[in-house]
Length: 154
View (cartoon, one colour):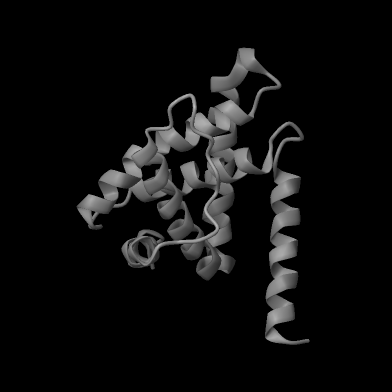
């Protein structure tokens, strides 16, 4: 099996695992925004990192949470409880995942950073439709690659 085929298989397995962890009422966008909120929540608790990026990370968390809440509509009465529970589950899963999937989580941190910049720039008003980025600017990649690597720790 080629390296490319192995990567594709691994990506498919990851998506399957994420789908199993997600509630049936959560869209793919809701799950990804929750993962980015959890990743950035973990990053925001680290010290000794680039302060300007750290500020962006802390600013972006509510944007990701807002996307999750907008996408998750099946239980409007318990939204904040649902967000808290799912955030705790997701953070716990990421902490376990870093042990075996570090390069993938570092890259996910980079993509979340690029997505965060777009959300912050747009202010995520009621007319903005959030879209997970498929293309990253060289500036965003440069800014978040080292930050993500360092934020996950040794």
